[in-house]
Length: 68
Image (cartoon, rainbow, N blue to C red):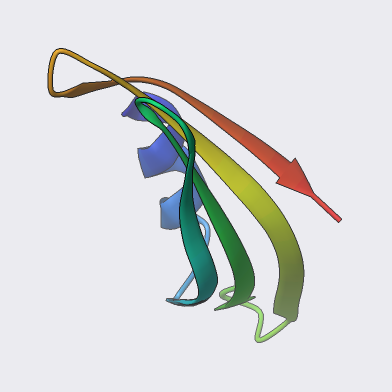
């Protein structure tokens, strides 16, 4: 959560376009996404990537992000 607060706090606006969601294995979900954010100085940041989310006993156990 702390990492998420730091990352999201860098931007004045954020937008994710989730292109697909797939359960690749039991309890592992893969998100394919495009991201656009704006920094306080007005600079636009764009990225695409894959985010793997591992769920254990109904809670997120691990998140791995692979950016293009």
